[in-house]
Image (cartoon, helix red, strand yellow):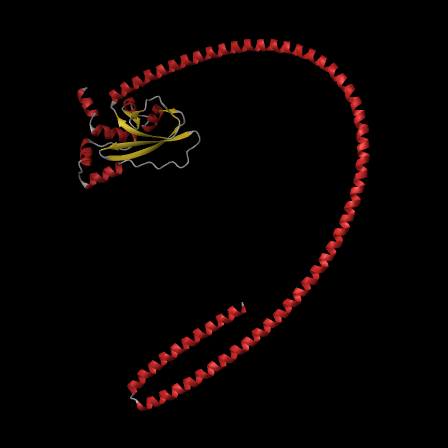
Length: 358
């Protein structure tokens, strides 16, 4: 027994227990020591192949199911598995789904699940997605925890039964009290209804008296209203006559105002037309002036270029060929600058014309 307890406390036994629950092949003691101690490349490769892979996240969880993630840690390595269980399942049901169906009972009780630093009892329910940490406790400790959880579950069930019995007794007492209150209320309603009938009879007599008085008053009011209607009809006809006269005068004033406005619009249109003609004539005169200036500038430029060409030709005849080439390049640069200056002047002149036209 002592040797078995010593064996179940070893890392080798805990590792193989995880392997068996995950459906992976078990390792011999030499293979485990080779893998844990860094062994050969083949042992490392075998360990990598046997290492449980992290379960992929379940994207679509079926209705009535929850996703539970169980994190494992052994020899500095960490991995996790995801399990789908029915909503309301117990932690014991989750542990059963984590091991093989043919696994012995000691595999089921040899480990616990923790939420943070707290151990989850075997009979706690899972109502939403959770993340638990795997903890190996051994079969003896696991059996002790299972017995303690069973006793706690029995106590909780007994307390729940007592609470339910007390709740039922309180509900029955409440029902009896409500029945007594309803009976008193029924008797009070009967007395109130009798009193209400007597009040209604008295009120009916008063209503008949008031109706007779109201009938006489209605006759008087009707005669008064007929007289008022006649007076209102007379006032309405006089008011209509005054409104008609006012409407006629307003129409006359509106007609005179409309005629005056048409005359004013016609005068403004004539003035605008005359202004447009003067502006068009001024623009044409401006265009002729600019064209004449451009022609004079072009003629002056051509005369200047002819003089420069003549002067350059005379200088070329007197200077050596090398100097002539240098001057030819200088002349070309100067012509390029002049051409650029003319382009700039033309663009500026166009912009000024555009500004004037605007």
